[in-house]
Length: 140
Length: 137
Image 1 (cartoon, each protein chain N blue to C red):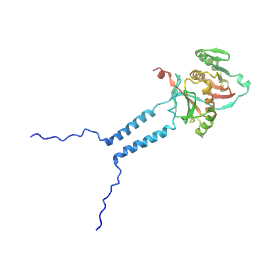
Image 2: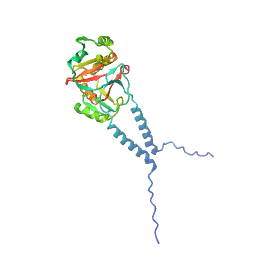
Image 3: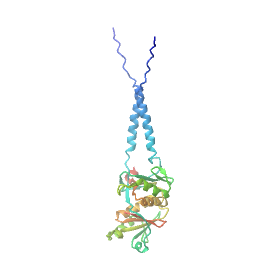
Image 4: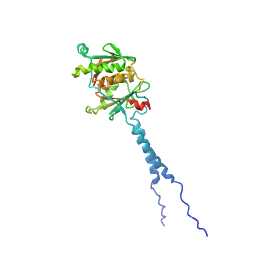
């Protein structure tokens, strides 16, 4: 005589499906939350009204347009600009002398602007924005 | 003779706890999403020197339509400085991080007034950019 084996349970209990979904949501939330951000810092000490013209005339002046960078009146490409501004700022030791006034054309694209500002920062310059409304922003 | 009433059970089925937890989680996720800016569409510019940055107190975004958002809510540039001042409160310098996420096609006329507003509020500006090697992949 053959003995009948007891049937094994194969179906997962339906009541556990919501717990499984809960754990899955936690998993995806944790995955989504851990996305590190990358970037560059710029310290903005203050926004102030335009200073005397006499003080500003000593500073390096940079004009940015969509196609070129003008340093003290000479149009340059970015690699050349980096060399020239590094050389110009190397001789200056005082913070007040390392101020670089940047004026951008309204249609200057952001990626180009950020490259120029990064070049000034790496050369040791203190970036100062000159806006249309005559407000000055110092960016260290 | 007094008839005995049948006792009714009032216990909560234990298997419903998972469902309750699930619904609570959905509720809190929706609540949290109202404060973030992940729904704002923008593409970062690339820069070789982009490094890991600390967490911010506020996040300003210029999206693909060149609209300005503060922590995911649309705001005009004129109101931005005041709103940022309130958000940053009395936080000491060095802990007043403000993320600036500018869409790579934005122009100076879009992002310079925003930088001015962050400066006015005394925020520590951090440009959010993508490292060039990551963008090339």
